Length: 111
Image (spheres, rainbow, N blue to C red):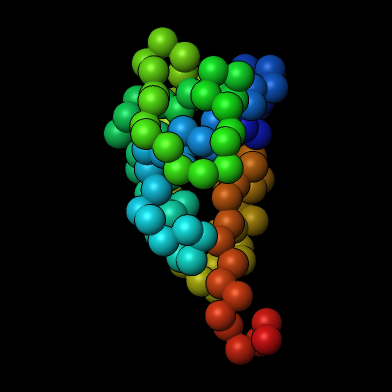
């Protein structure tokens, strides 16, 4: 998302991971792709995510302390690309810029 912000504003903005840990976490750590989807959904529904400067990382889940007046970026949503759609993925990178990808380490090929 920070890459998208840079492309649209020509300015580097560090976004708050802690904002996501505290406010968008589903409680299962990093054990599934649903966490990325929960993060993007949270940012879109919440009308933004705070900056790292105003909501620093503490390395553990705390009470959600999001503030509307310190939003560093907003999102209109996300699109999911299905497995095996390399051409669609290439097109997304070419037309949209930086993207987020989830790679499952449970696949036998990776063992």
